[in-house]
Length: 253
Length: 253
Image 1 (cartoon, each protein chain N blue to C red):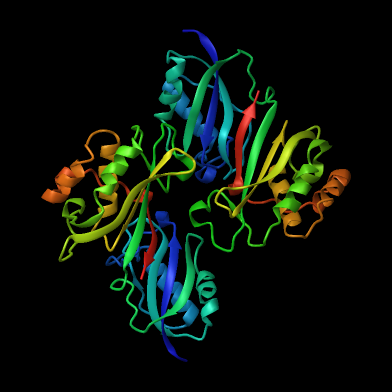
Image 2 (image 1 turned 45 degrees about the horizontal axis):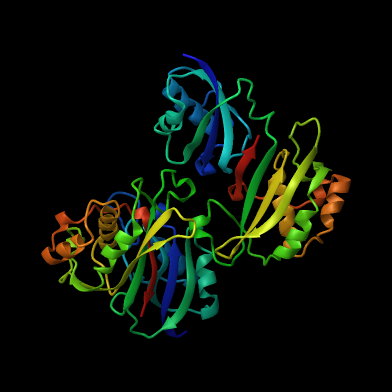
């Protein structure tokens, strides 16, 4: 059987996962993570151990519609049936949306050119009952136009250290944001922060969303964004919003 | 303090409740039900025991946007702050949407004139990941126009015994359906069964939705609805769909 590199596009509801990355705490049962759950299903489908690399190490509670993962295997399953074969071994909160054969050297982390995240803010005095696992509830009235003014200031190549929490462990904190805007949702009581970039620092989208909320409720001027960027001062930015509002929408290569 | 009858409009995500009705299995802890949870929060708010009556005994896993409940109490909380006071004592999957003073004899069951339910069918080969607690996943392609043709045949005063499961315990199985139609959802991969009536038998909406799915995927002709009505034959109708797709939207008095 030929050895192939496979590229998977993967979607999940992050609620019941301890994030993407496998975690095997000593003396305890392994945690339920996306990487471990998906790797195990792939191994059952292809009949041998594999190594699975994911493009983004999403945190516990964060969702994905377009996570990308890759593995190499000699596999007898036709490519058009591979997603189905893996999905048959997965619970209903995780799904392979597509599978394709990639170049032998395909690296989902290193070759990623552009990613889009969405942070959903539920802006109403009513509770988000049915949506509470997928939004952050903000009671204060938000001004989306002010937020959008602030969001646009993030576009470009900047040092985003002021929008990262400690522990990112990256050599450089310079990233390029290609687009950042506020989208109202169709139902009317949500405000979405949509952001595209070439890469994101630890908690960066959740801190940006937390900062834009402060702008939206009048605590920060939109120009405060420029100061955070200039001084790279995490303390000047807003809070890190909780994970459940965040979704990795797609990754382009 | 004056004794008042209070009418509450209540919304909940039914996922983590064992239905509306209080259940105290002997020798075991009481189950988490909407009625018990809400009654306890009201009692804390008003400072004394109350009896709480709900308009619809929704099953385990069924959701509500407009359940109606009533209680009588002498209560010092101003009516405009009562919902807030109760909500402060509720978890985030249950909410009093409004509270008002009702006539002394207000009976949420007996005085209900019209109710609307919605059953959400997720009709796609992709999984409903983020929506899986609020839809029923149907893989077969559905024809909404055929379903709508069948749905319209339910409108009117009929004996709905063929669309009820045993155990309803009602004296008569005659009900009036004021409206029954198929609505596509905005996102495009859902088909909703929307039904209004003066009352519903046990599992009636879930059996109607299950029967309309059989019509939609070509197993039944739309005219099969008339035969089920005529012969009052439960075995001729479709399956009882699972609870998570069902939502009680509103009740009119």
